[in-house]
Image 1 (cartoon, rainbow, N blue to C red):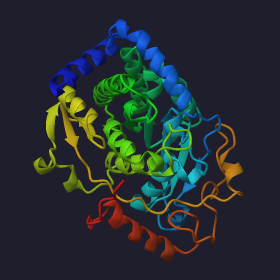
Image 2: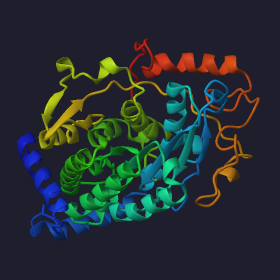
Image 3: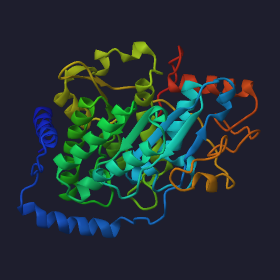
Length: 400
């Protein structure tokens, strides 16, 4: 039987409280199920292909054409987390979630965006401490990222990490980033019950554990001043209905279309965190089931419906938003001459004007380093209605 929203909220609050006070975790499964769970996991592993390929490196400058229109420094976007944040499962840098969001953010802001991705395939939440340290040590404090996106949690569930411990690591990471002046958006734990080869009862167990962790993550992130976007149910039904399109070759990680679906859900929250979304859209709309709720209840509601944003308000309250997903602008092209540049070691960074854009004069779409200011402006005007930016917010809602 599925848990009620009130029960889910209570469990999430207990996990988050245990994390805050250093608790070792809360047992969410009866001991009798452990043996059966391990058996199901082994069967699922045989069916899920897995991949040893390194995710494509997408670090670099996006929206370089806007540099002529915007004389200030680029926006700095950082990605942290696990294989999903790294873009495991696709072959081209432009297909990764970091590149997709960097391109879209540049089009909305009409400003270049510098992407740095320190996510690691296979990482659990305990690796966030290392990733944050790496990210912040590369720059002076005044040059910290403007906004960081974190996607983590799936490996914590599959490795049976106590949820309170997972949440504590995430909470500490968000606190450090906020102290450094970064806005933080967390894509919460995905729905592992959506993985096609997983059978029952593991599918039900995986879904329940995923949602409980996602809700507890939301409470912790909001209390540290970040925002969350639920990825679980967003990826669940849509991936279950279209597994061949939204899962990659290993039947576990998203395909290019799957990452685009997730990026469309995260983009509005990313823009809102930077003050780039229309201010009138910040008010809750009761017709869209939005409102101001206790944090734990908002977390439970979000865990049950993908694409839901939760942002902190005063005291124990949170804003629950169902932002409209928008079409992404055409992703930036990445040629073989730029891929090695993006794949250099940590802290090396691309040369100015390099990275995933092909460079001046290619005319490949927003952010590819065109020389023409008029072309950059035209590209932005074409993208903004679809993204909901500016006054024209009538862009059609994208389907998965």
